[in-house]
Length: 313
Image (cartoon, rainbow, N blue to C red):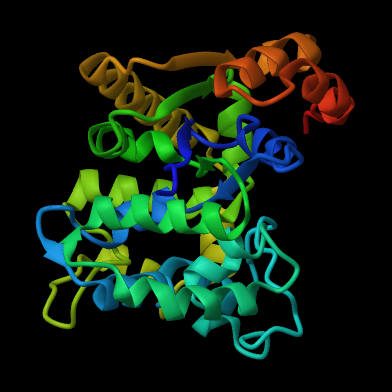
């Protein structure tokens, strides 16, 4: 009988060093460092009903409206690693979201991995979506010959209540950063410009401009932000007011702290980006020991030099 892999989740507001941690963990031979999976997966489908494996794969292999809009206006996130010569390279607006970052960060041939998953995932039994997520990441870990998966999504604080409720046995790393620096970085990043727009729209109008149907009555103020109407100038304009992103930081932090307080995860490690920059060997050693890497001290010493001092614009 195959032993289930260890599971861990990094929760953060985003723009606070979580991508760096993921990239460093990718160098550990026993760890599958999964990037940008849960934030999208949790928002694409509710977890209050059971779905088949085929329906679940359809969710993973569809294009994501907000990412497609960013491709259309020429502002793709720098985290996208899908190769230009790939199957969808000629029209990235149709790129399955699971390929844009998640699979492309794991292998130089993400299309091949996508095809391997397309053969297996539809055979998953009918079950709740969160169970599908776990089975999918466990399968990825097995295919990669790893012993654990560690998932990291920018902005995962937004879905922290869902994550901690759905994965009660997972190790949880809560990464934080000074709000002012985080907000400034968010204001320059297209994905977070969209996240802030969507959160603000939900709070103000009860409507997400990226989740409307033809029958939805859209307020005039939101029409310019609909996926087919969004422009690069409109998005950049929203990035000029850093106060919007300070508010987003406050909201996401409250989400994560409340979720952690409610769930009281058995395995919890809190990290600060500032401490990571100040003492990378010590902080990475803490992380490695928490995740139970085979050689946490050696791993930390090997990768600590990649932790650089942030450039403040």
